[in-house]
View 1: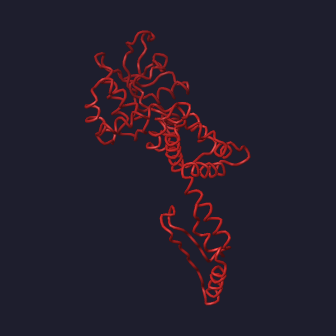
View 2: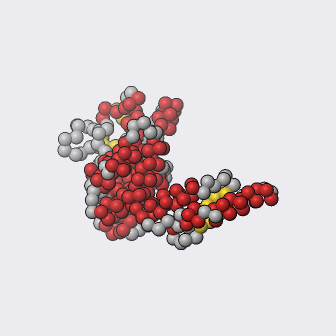
View 3: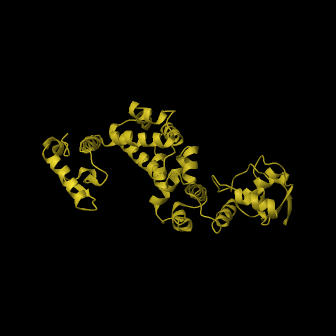
Amino acid sequence: MDAGLSISHLALGDRTFDLGFARRYDRLRQSMLAMGIVQPILVRQAAAPGAQQGAYQIVCGFGRASLAAELGIPQIPARCLPPMASDFDCLQLALFDNLPHRQMNPIERAIALERLGCHVGREDVVARYLPVLDLQPSGIVLDRTLRLLRLIEPLKVAVAEGRIEEKAGVILAGWEPADQEWFARLMEQCCPTVSVAREWAENLDDIARRDHCAVREVLSAPEVATAWSSENAPPPVRCGAVRRAIHRLRFPTLSAQEEAFETARAALKLPPAMRLDCAPNFESDDRYLSIRFRNADDLRRAVALLQHWLDNPDLISALWPRL
């Protein structure tokens, strides 16, 4: 069949073959409003117990069918698969229908692999389907991808939308749901960048393992909770405060050195033309001083300031904090 099918005959709630997650249909909506439904959907007559009589399962075209129902379009072009089409056949059709048109997000890849794994063995999933999804054919990669399905819904959406990297999502998926909920609230309050969200996931995971505590205990600690629960501060300010608080908890000695060095540097009252830095993470005692000058007078002033520092040994020695 390749003709109009009444929307009322579609089992819109049956998502057996729907591999989409957190998809936006803005462009499809515009296309349908301007040109109608150009591409037929693919359906199979529903045979599941309890299915409405005469209903059809959607195999490909969930977005088109959902929008048609929403827009009040009574019929939709449809092509019906032969009765012998199995669940596995339909699932493969759904997968390969998606691949040419768009890149599936990490959660969608996990959904596809999990459902395929119900029909074929693990080795087949690794060898046949991971490369199709642009993933390395490895059992480790399969397990890491499937782990994303343990995320709570808000974090799944964040991974699907690219607000949380897949690598960070895998870390978060190893947490208890209650800890994930705390992290989701933290994301909502602070709106971190992707790199900051990854930094938080890694550091919080490290702290919880080191201190043998739950992540929610770390996030509810006064120094962290105060940073992200302030209602008066805008999200960027809250984000910066949380970064500093988590950094101090993860690297207490390094943070103390950084704060002591910053205090000592501020005491030098550096002019804009001079910059003083330390070795990354205080890996050595090296200090780096740069001086920008345009003429001899600028240089003389810089030298005079250096001499002032040397005449005050405490100013200089404070640049090498010993904790």
